[in-house]
Image 1 (tube, rainbow, N blue to C red):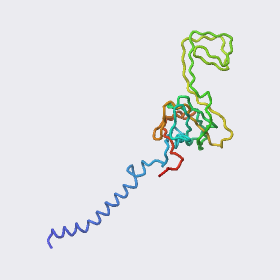
Image 2 (image 1 turned 180 degrees about the vertical axis):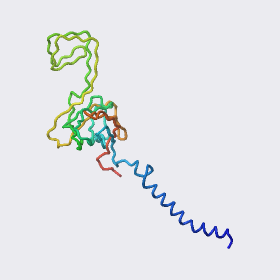
Image 3 (image 1 turned 90 degrees about the vertical axis):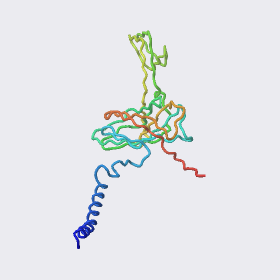
Image 4 (image 1 turned 90 degrees about the horizontal axis):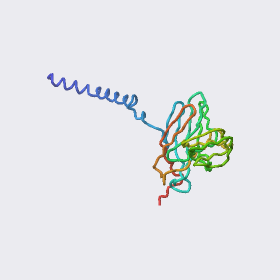
Length: 238
């Protein structure tokens, strides 16, 4: 047998060994490291999610509009979400705002989140209170001394139940969006309701998102792009 034939037989005998080693390397590469199929997977939910410090906000959605397929200008929308606190100290959701809802937000219930606990927000039909509207004040060249006014308006300024003594304000202007927190003893422990008030666009359709900022007492701000939840009604295939 020639040397060339011997070399060919040797290579053929080593081929299964080489193939086996290569298969083992590929298998180990698919199950570990940064190229795994699971390193970029996210939870199978429709809503947005984000984390700020020890606070995690999960599955944030706008509740599907009742009795219609979109939100109209001026309407309110309920937020659906879960807030989890992975820290030791209690935190609290103190404000919610959105540039697409010009009249602020209304939080109903106790929005405190104890350490290693979670709370959830469910849909609400609560009527927005008047204090959720933006408050704009402008006073020019006025002076009030020892007066008390209730429900009066002067030069674009509205004052309710306030008392001012010896003050003078010239050329000032302020605009504030208020988040109103309302107690609701009927809500279960760990459950709140959040309502964005006063849609500024003509329509808000499924598939569109709105920017919502959540402000926590300790963790700070978290801003998310929030979609509309899927319709609860069954699809008509006819």
